[in-house]
Length: 554
Ligand code: GLC
Ligand code: CA
Image: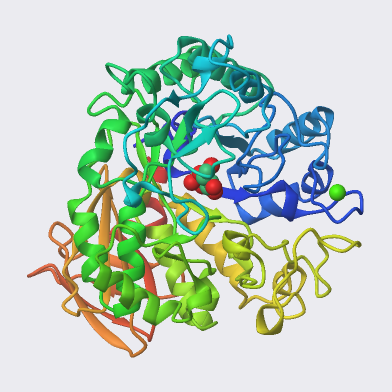
């Protein structure tokens, strides 16, 4: 494998960092994060090793769904800055070698969007068909209501124009109708606009809803995804779509464009994420191992996006009721920690009881799992949530830069947590100076992840480690191999791996000092692991130095 591939197909082993401009850094002292503040922190992100920033929605909005309710797709929320500030930010990010993608939220608009205001004026409005209207909708299936705490239907009666409109999410988010070619054209224009301003792609919000909840049904809903991707590739080769597609694996492959890979470039792996949490709860590698064994291979140049937490609830909707209850019991037993009957509104370190060893192991697992890691701002310093904030906002707290917060000199847009996850205990400044900190651990993991493109590019095999608590896998690419093992339990364990093809080779630790020998006779190796220990190892034949054995050297 040539390293040049990793610049053309850059997303395949990118390090994606999701942040909300509103909560990252306030540059003008009004308590609200903004593009000027973010731009000042670019070197922090570059120093961490981030290669791609994912910006949550930054467009004008009534802010009833934290910006996922947009009133103008071609502009910047004035609280966050101006288009000029955006361009300066983009230029600085590019200068530091970082790409930028942004949320594309076009399943719906805000009900305050001028398009919807026009559409609802009357049944004969020229924009009537931009949204989905019905005289008598099908009865609701309660399982399809995404936010059951606030909504009990997908349809809302509009008294003025005497029809119901469809809203897959909140009632203030009417669904755009991509069955209408004018709407599809407009979405393409939005892509083109932001790509012209430097974006390398989009995280596409709610993909299945976007193409399915339309009227009339499209003969081939996936054609629209193909068209979007083709348009982007024409404008700028190497631009990507990262899809939020939370559906079972067998239904998901078509979003990649089946064998062709001409639709969504990367999909979040919601299934292995949920199984990873089940594995962590049980201290048993089984569920995660099964998921990764069953996971379909994405088409060439496609990739899975791996994550443990994001800006939403930790959804456990694809687990059985019993499994979900196990994760609730382990990581969010109190009612206030749970949300929508399916998830947890917590960040990872609080769920793992603040146990730094375990937190480090969980992130080592994330970076080593086959795919592209996506992290949510603040994960690198182990920020906690603030359950006093409403709903999913609990995890969207201001970034903690210094002991007194450092997000803004003014009253911040959202309250930081108190207690052991407050800024005086968890902040960037302290962790920069502490070699044992989580921040330093992230830097190490990112450096190694980038040095081992086998992890993301290679063929992976989930290994039998001889112990239920150990998740072990190997990644092979062009004759180079990386072997990884994680101990999910809190006692020391001796794993035993069988590594066919590596008979007589040496395994060199990549995160600490150490080597192990693979038996020349039966390809077995004993692998001691500390409580919640993790090891990344590179295989090399005795006559070759480990530094020369990787794909990097080819
Ligand atoms: C996606 C987003 C979520 C938002 C919803 C509606 O699921 O991740 O934050 O509320 O779409 O736009
Ligand atoms: Ca501000």
